[in-house]
Length: 283
Image 1 (cartoon, rainbow, N blue to C red):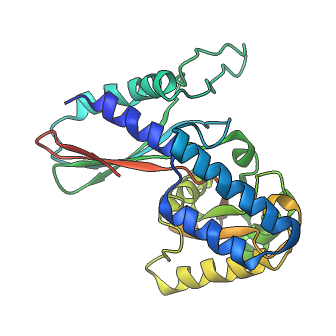
Image 2 (image 1 turned 180 degrees about the vertical axis):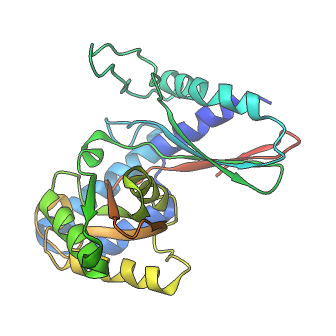
């Protein structure tokens, strides 16, 4: 079992092949648009096709590699997996190849292999079972620059959450390369709200939150943001976001954190499922 090689393949898949749900969302957006907005979406879809057929990165910014791991409490290969995650980044950097995107914040030194202190970033979630599921989410710098944390007064309630999200996304304009996917994390603490927003991006586009209240918030935010007219690449149009996904945690009564995580149209992701017997599947 070569975990690093398989995880490296998953990173490569995420970098070069846009998931079908994201492609369908872009195609649907193209059919809604006219003029410059439609031209932009046609160019995006042609870019997606060239990347897929040529096995080259979808974007020159191949992102910061982020892993979200659902780990079975009886998973027998944990030490191997811990070692494999940064090694997978090195493998993919060489094999795809990926642009080296990690620099020391003080010296500017780049190790050249997409690793570094706390990078790749890994979020661990313990679940029942003896397998593991590793989600790969490369995150581009342009969209990451448009992420934000809002610490709202609790009295603002759901209305305040909606206003904060819509105002922020509209203010970003064309900077994060719309049409974007927005992850919204509500509650918890400052760090958890942003983490929840990023985790919400792992859900397939169009798949609503299972709780009706949260699903309704997602739908309303999509409608409000798309009504802004920012449009593809900020050039105007009906489609500013392809989807809004929300997640939440219980909060302190005196605090209402809202994490707003912006993902560009290149919603790159892949998953590796690892069984206890060592079998692996990249999806």
